[in-house]
Image (tube, rainbow, N blue to C red):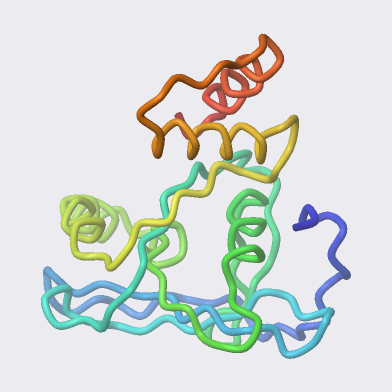
Length: 183
């Protein structure tokens, strides 16, 4: 996959800034319907759905680091502009399906971070949100510095009962991967 900087600029026309609608009950959450691109230049767009945590449809939870909060990119949420960090933007570009919707719980999008009361209430549900997810997707960042090779080696290590020999370059590649901010 190419880094987000190399994607064509989005041609989405944004309405006013997106404002989260309030959650009505303690165990209500929002889920992001990440929409497929409409063409090669499509920016990221999605819809936020409200659901009760106990009754929500199957979803995936995203674990990532926010990254530099001063570098943000716009996405379209329910037609309005919503700003996310460059790292999250990159993750969503890689995670969206080319022809189908993907249902995700992503803290920075699904929680109204400007509302301290909501943010605190939702924080108490975070473990439950991850536990209830069909799958947790971990975004470590863009492929760089041999990270794909490091992931292959880690996978090989997890599936073998034998010994795998690695030279110092491969060892350093794994160490570099494990030094990423997510860890």
